[in-house]
Image 1 (cartoon, one colour):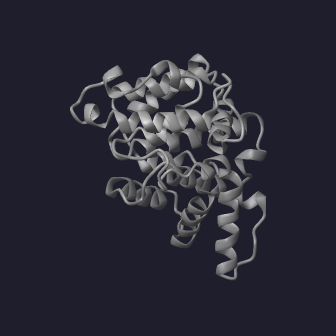
Image 2 (cartoon, rainbow, N blue to C red):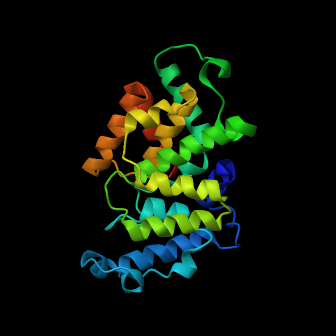
Length: 244
């Protein structure tokens, strides 16, 4: 599986500083997707799909998997404050900063990386691959938390991730994640370190709207399952908002 490659490209898309692997300008494409979603609202509400809903599949392929994950929810603006792209782009550093800030606020000594785990951006090899899978799984589950990713959108997301260079094993894994039951406890068991737990939660915050009751409930369940303290979760959410 090549999860680390896919995650890195999604993080680059979120940062908006680089183009996708196909040369698509990600920011421009996301803005276009926003207009498409807005323009197709009445068709989506009536249950119609395909071209009638305003989706141009060819224009979306190759750069917008992350955009679909965080922007496919009906009625949500792609440019809204709920979409925290900066938190995705800098998930490792921001999760570590949140931990340091929470420690300082409670007058606790800083702990070493050995105790807390390394950031995703400094990992390599099999450990990086495993962490990447954890974060992708967290992202997909969070994006599904309000129940609004339908079968058509599942197909689109899978196609987009394929366009980023997913191998067959990765393709199959994504398809399974898009259909698997939402289980915060099972997801939390995948965390390989405290830092991984913080990154998983931050990634989840980045693709959810905490004003949506279903998504807020998912975040609360996940925080509990990951055994994150209220101080840490508050700081993680603050970092996500600040990153924008």
